[in-house]
Image (cartoon, rainbow, N blue to C red; front, side, top):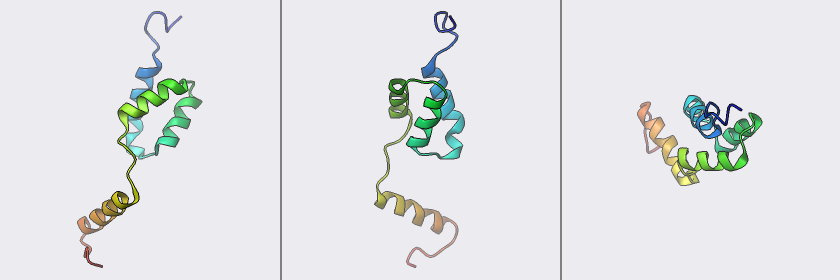
Length: 79
């Protein structure tokens, strides 16, 4: 009944959930588990995650991110 009158929308809920939880820096798998546990269909979860999350970074990108953070904290990049 709520879906019929536009008061309940899995897509809007999922988008809001991701925006609210983005500070937790969860991975895609965790977001997927949480949304499905809350009753959102897997198809909607896939669509929202594809539109909301950046592509997964490879090992080199993750390593560069770590180095950048350490340099920002004042550590020597050559060590």
